[in-house]
Image (cartoon, rainbow, N blue to C red; front, side, top):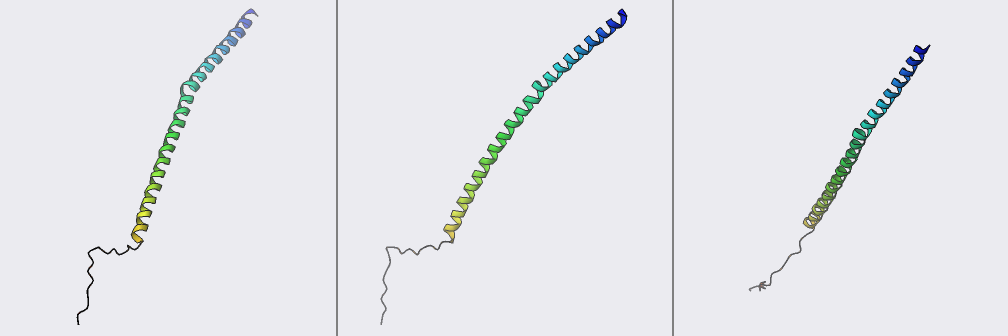
Amino acid sequence: MHYKDSLYLCLAMLKTVLLLLLAYIAYRFIFGFVIPVSKATRSVRQQFKAAQDQMEAQMRAQQGYAQSQEANQNRPNPKKFSSDYIDFEELK
């Protein structure tokens, strides 16, 4: 019976060591890979959104400028008379 007890004790210790090793590997994976990747992904998304917002603002500004230019072109220009206007008289 002494042999069986030592075998169960050895298996229990092996199981404990393997669980601790698995926990260490999971810890290293989570804190060494998963968290840094999620932080980098969040950072890239924020930068991409900021760039996209900036591009949209530029597009709106350009469209507003183009629309104001178009409105100015569609408006009839008032005729300007120069100060050198000569009044013609009809000859009889």
